[in-house]
Image (cartoon, rainbow, N blue to C red):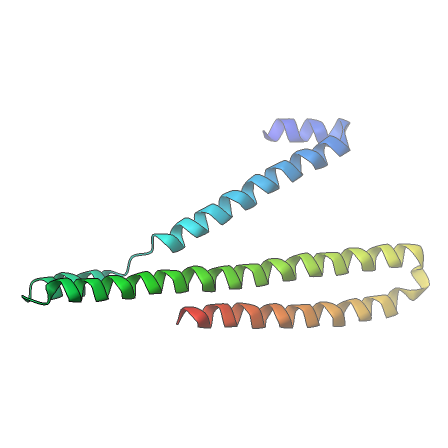
Length: 145
């Protein structure tokens, strides 16, 4: 893989970009699936232990086990929702800041004498986007609690 990328870098820069895009898409898909799998199969040992002790108590064992199972299921759904909210907030901020930076570089390339003003506006806008992203991540993580 490394030699192929090195060859593409030297001979065909556009094919190198396409290959890197393909690798990045696979990496993002793998990361998303791994995160979803970890959130889905997250088991709280304390809830499982409480359910086992409740089942051994006697007549209301089935009701206790059902209640504990419902609590565990709700906890897992909260985790999925909070994780998705935090992840999408961070992903949106990354895309937004990338577009802001790219647009600023293009604008400076077209009009170099305005580099100071463009850079200042870029930093202010990126800070606002980052603030919204931080808010989204915090709210997503608070949803889990």
